[in-house]
Length: 212
Image (cartoon, rainbow, N blue to C red; front, side, top):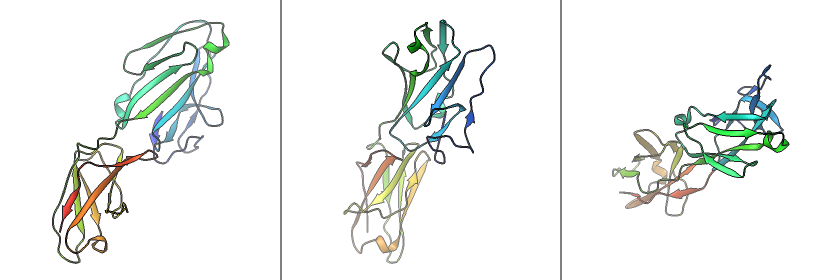
C-alpha cells in the first residue's frame, strides 16, 4: 500500500497491480473501490483517515499471522490500526506479528474481516519557528519556517484569512513562502501561517511573522 498525490482510491492502470491467485497457498490482497483485489495498491495521499479492506481467500481453518514492513516510510501517518470485525478488536500496527485464527465461519475470512486504518499525525501548531525580514517598497517578502512536519502544506495568510503565498510542503530544513510585493502593505505587516494535510482540516500556527 503506497500513498501518492497522483493516485486515486479506485483502480489506477498506471500504478496498481492486480492480485494473481497463488497456487496451493492462501491469498491476501487489498481491496479498492469497486471490489478490485490488488497486490500493489497506490492510493490518494489526500485524507485525514483512510480505510483499506483486506481480502483473505483460499484460507483453510487454522492459525495465521500478519506482519507489516515499511511502516517507517509513512512519515506523515501517525497511527496504523488493524480492525478485526470477526473478533471485534482493533490493534495498533507495529513491527510485532499479529496472530489470528480462521475457522469454518464465513465471517472469519473474506473481504469483510480485516480493515487497515491509516490516521494522520496530529498537526504541530506550536513547534514550527517563523521568521521574516523587513522589505523595501516593491520587493517580495520571504517568510521562513523551520521545524515543519512532513506531508503538511504551509501557506501565508493575511489578517482577513486570505492566502497571500503559494503553498509549500514541510519536512525540509526550511520552508520558504514568497509573498508578492502586491500583497505587502506599506507599514506593519502581520502574517499568519495556515497548516494542514491535503484533504484534511487546516489550522493556524501559534506563531506569526511581523515585518515592515
